[in-house]
Length: 250
Length: 184
Image (cartoon, rainbow over all chains, first blue to last red; front, side):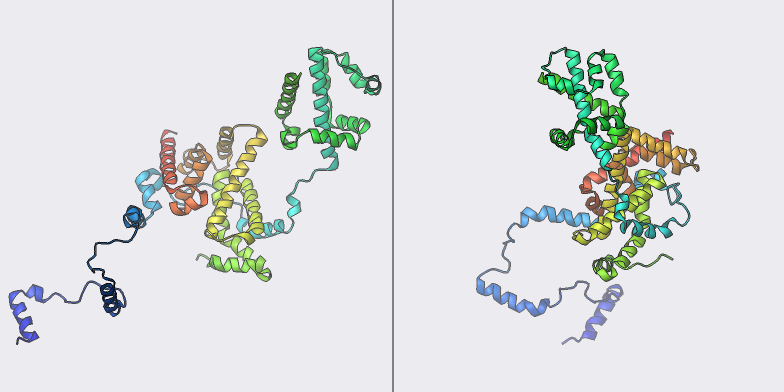
């Protein structure tokens, strides 16, 4: 019988190149593979399945495409630097930090204390409304609704049934308004201040009136209160919407 | 040398323990403040506005971190809040001035030009002007990818948009910005 040395010598004579290649196996097997193999074979034997069975797991082909794509995507390394250099060498070439902004000295050193101060004083950030402003908001809405309705009345010349008691209790300024031309009326309306409106409501209304008015004024139809007092366009738009509604209902 | 911070799990643990809540919160601020600041600043331009948005953002973190479900990374969650706060800020600016978002973006461009260091010949300033021409959400995508080198997968979680859409948006943004720089 040939011994190992003879075989090696033979190979060396035939091809020194091949003889010089390491014979360590390149492939690996999962841990414990050979330990489990006999049991798997026996199990297959007892269940009548062929080891070379052509069966595949259920749903295998349905998910195969997605699994392959997922593996492809996982293999494609997400490289933002390479991406931008391919998309735009111009943008890629801009030196770090790539922006021109500066921050005040020691900004980041003091930031955490500023934030912690704000966290422990959450009320400081809340813009609270004074009772007067809340009253004035509803009052303004009610006043403008009333005056806009009166303006529509003036425009359409539609006679209204005026109760003698109501006439007796009307504010003199509204009496005066009845005799104004449309232009005079609009000028007078625009000259009203917040204080005038609030005073009128306080004088002629009570909490019941305010509650009734508030229930008829849907808050979500009112302009945002910041816009309301700072943006004339928001107010004008709101008034014209009311006039349109009233015209349609008449 | 970059400061070493505890990992996010440790920070969350500290925050959720009442005895170490403030320490944990402080550490979160220190760990993420600069990244979040620059992300916000690139959206709102002005330092004072960025400072306001950043501080409001961290107040929301203080109030909401207890309920953070850890379905995403902490940083992803923080970025999402910072992005939403920036967008809300820009939306409020639009309402206050009763102008269109285009005018707000033009306003941001004007603010850039008003900066004492503004130099229209420098490409970094041109880049900022070019970015203001993008729709705000596309600007966010560009910022996250170009400046923060955020992977699309993470960006998808921050912005709750598909990776494909983000990639298309970014590529489009790069082309628009390049065209702007070359033509101005």
